[in-house]
Length: 107
Image 1 (cartoon, rainbow, N blue to C red):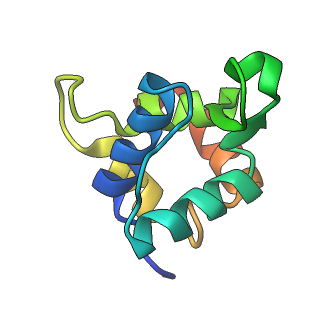
Image 2 (spheres, helix red, strand yellow; image 1 turned 135 degrees about the vertical axis):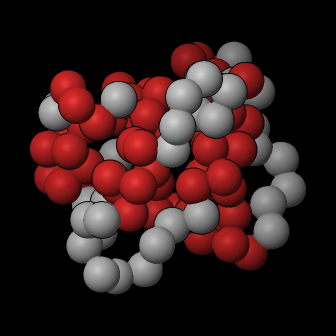
Image 3 (cartoon, one colour; image 1 turned 180 degrees about the vertical axis):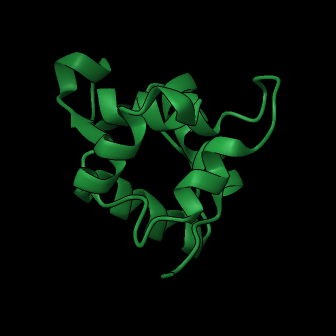
């Protein structure tokens, strides 16, 4: 099994993007690295100035919204989706994530 991701940090980052029109503010080094990874792998997208209301901001893609829905700790229940993601060789690989997220039993 490869690296496990810090799902709490990813959740916080995705919530920040969702709630602040993509301006995630100042990130620590791991947060900045995760943001870059999520952008590169299609969980986040750069919004144009007209979409973001001026300037460049980030937004959630449908894949990013799906990831947030799976790992959102505010939703009652157990940590099953995070466990399933941790069992993958690379849970944030786009093809792997899309396959895992499409399975109804993960949620």
